[in-house]
Amino acid sequence: MGKYQIKLSLLTLCLLTLLLGCSSQPDDFCPPQLQASQCKQALENDNPTINKHYEQRRWRSKKEQKQQSLDLGIEADIPILEGQVKIIGPTVEDGVNSLAMKIWLIENAKYTVDATYYIFDNDLAGYAFLGAMCNAVKRGVDVRLMVDSLGSADMRHEELKGLLRCADEAGFIRGPDGKLTNKRARVQVMIFNAVSKIFVNINRRSHDKLLVIDGNSPTNAYVMTGGRNISLHYYGINEKGEKNKDTFQDLEILIKNPEGTLKQLKATHKKGVGDSPLTISRVSELYLTLLYNHSGNKYLTAWLPYSGQQEKLQESLDEIKRGPLFARSYANIEEELEQGYNPSKLRLAHEMANIVSYEVFEKYADVKGRNPNSIVEILDELGSLKYNVKHVRLVSPYIFLANEEPEEKDGRYQELAGIREWLAADPERTIEIITNSVMSSDNFMTQSIIDMEMVPRMLSNDPKFIDEWQDDLEVSEENPDFIGSEDFQKAINNPRIKVYQLGRLDADLIGGDETYGKLHAKFIVTNNVSFVGTTNLDYRSRFINNEMGYFMLGDGVNGELNQIFDDLKKRCYLWGEPDWLAMRKKVRELDGMEGFSAKSQRSVYSKLIFTGIKWQL
Image (cartoon, rainbow, N blue to C red; front, side):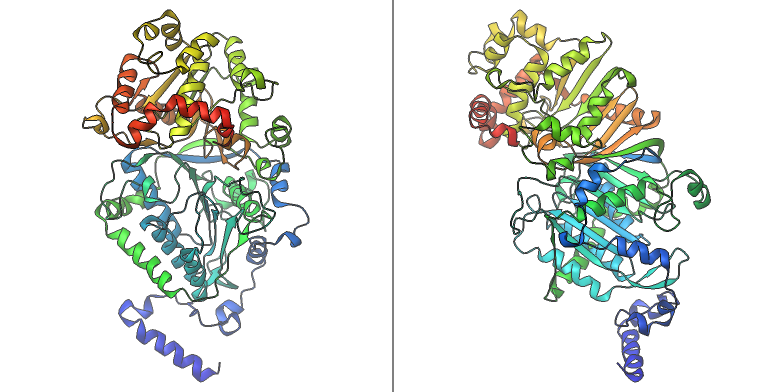
């Protein structure tokens, strides 16, 4: 392109954008049609720190990798690091705030945006999220995104290809000094364990939900994880921007690096890329780099312009901002992000060994032992006397405790026996669990495992009691003699194990006026250590999926999680109490899937055991 053509295109650009204010661009702005060699201010800044980080963030094919990336994650000595933690709770309002935070953080990122989600829906939330990412790359922010090929199943992924084409107008990345560098921002999109690839075990999924903003910038970085996927179902609003009372009750944490200047952080942390300290945000970014480069992933490309999709990204972002609930939340996000943090020590944990291991069921102990960063392995370690854990409070929508049938027993999966041993070792130890009920669950198969197997076996080790509970309704749950029996009453009044289930008799589903929604939060809080992440602690989370999260040590975080647990408990019934039984009876009387699945729990459970499908849930 000649000098005359360049001047003409710049003039045209200004004329076309006059109403938006051409002069509102930064003084060193370079139009996207210019190459680095044509942009003087970018050409003159060949920043070695940016260059190294830029190369490290590049997707690599299997042929380029000397060692499988997930093996590096398994072998990594992940440090315990200082940070600040903000809890984003389970209310409908918290859900709206969560989406507003994500979009605000992407829109205010300076250097990088990295994200991965199991479910990424093509709804208003998904398109708005991508719209914010599109704008980020245009202003010079390097963007990476990964979605799971089954959780986010789509034959074409046109919305993601629309995001890819946003890189056609990518800006130049700025260095730590704020000046343009000669590196243009990119969009890299990966599909985890893509079903279109051969030699991929499509049963191994990435259940991750993680957003990292400016991970290598110690004083600007944010990390966000928990149970929320990218779908309106999690964020308190519907497609019209109106309140959705039936929103999933979920929970996330927002993490910042510890307070301090860059010089102070360098003095207290190991050295990372360039001269940057190895902070909790940097560790999180590196974790995503390893996950992105898994050999089973598909690197997405776009050959067509997908201009219609690009327009939809922007239109959706504008539309969601016009909604009154979102707009109100978004207006306060900057202030919200400045407060409510608690200092904490943090350690990232994951289940990458599940993805690359074979015979995960037959050799579960070997798989778990292979990964020192395993969530389940660390939880087992916390049960030792060394950590003095007395009280465990656990929230999960689909929790199972692996326990084989007597004829299958070989000692591999006797987690219930392990819990009983842990309780027996100290009379002060207690366990409280909050999970879904037949009213609130979105998965009737997992709920049948919970109600027919996990809870009764936790509360009683009497095989006769368990057999009677699993018998037909008229013999068990609807039999006054059984419910009033000493065995049943002893089980439900277990002083050291309490299981609560979401939903009460005033629910709108059964004629009341209260909406309970569906529980989707996943967290653990003890008398000292806590955990927030993506694992449901069901069989799939423990044996098959990759999961991730953060173990935290800090009184403030524990205090907030305990308060949320107490608030959730007020919306629950204790498993087995009279009101719980009455609620279940009312649900069984409903028409439709809710009533049918509640009535069929026992037969569904029998089929799951007979077929072995329970190990895939």
